[in-house]
Each structure stands twice: as structure tokens, then as C-alpha cells.
Image 1 (cartoon, rainbow, N blue to C red):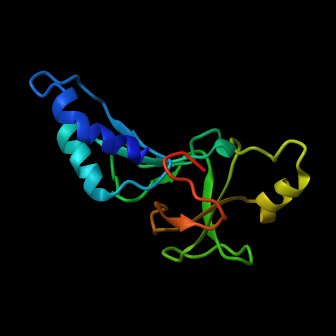
Image 2: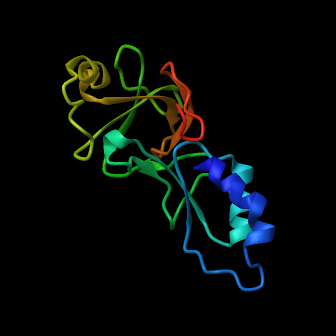
Length: 160
């Protein structure tokens, strides 16, 4: 997650052997958006591509990802991986590209609901989509950009 990447960058001069660095295939960033400047510093420092992704427990962790090879868009968390991704408005209508709304997903790896909590299940799965509580938009190619949260709590560095 981005706070960990920032710590790694702060410690790289001391802890990362610049003369004989270990080969890295990729650096993965998930949980929240990574600033494009941090992405560029990571790739420059560690000489490996940064692959941004987006995940939640309700989707067996993987929801979207930029590809390792091919088009990566800094600031985007990529395209759906095994899930359909849509942006819905408050009336549960799918919005067109570049319109901001709630990020919603559906697919075989998405949980069917919450154990012993039918009210939470009904709210979270309205309209046949799992409502993430995150706000964002899709581009014409299906790449997702997160813009904020819609639910009442704040998740910063994994703490609620």
C-alpha cells in the first residue's frame, strides 16, 4: 500500500544495495491510489514496473489491476480482473465513461453476502452489484480511477 512504498523510498539509500540490487520483477501497489510522483520514484529507485491494483476482502482480494505488460495508467487502479466493474449513480443506473459515481462490482469471486446479516447484505448488493463505498470513474478503455469514499469511515494506511 502507498504508505509502505513511501517508507521504502525513505529508507532506500540506506537499505537497498545500489551496487548489486536484487532483481525485482514488479512492485505492486494496492489499497488506495498511488500518487504518480511516488510511482515514478519507485520505478526509478528499484528499476521495476509498478502495477497499481484495487481490492477488497469481499472480492477475494483481486478486483482491478493495471497489466504488467501493456498499457499502465499512473493514478489508475487498472481494469477489472475476473469481475465486472461499473460506476453507478444513486438510482443504481450505470454511468457512462468519465462520470463520477460509486464503484460497484459483480462476478464469481465476489461474496454472495454477509453471514447472519441480511440487512447489510441487502444494502451492499442493491441492484445486483456489490457496492464498494468507493467513488470513482471509468475511462473508455475500462480503466478505473478512484476519487474518494462514500461511506462514513476513513481508511488510512489500513486503519479504520
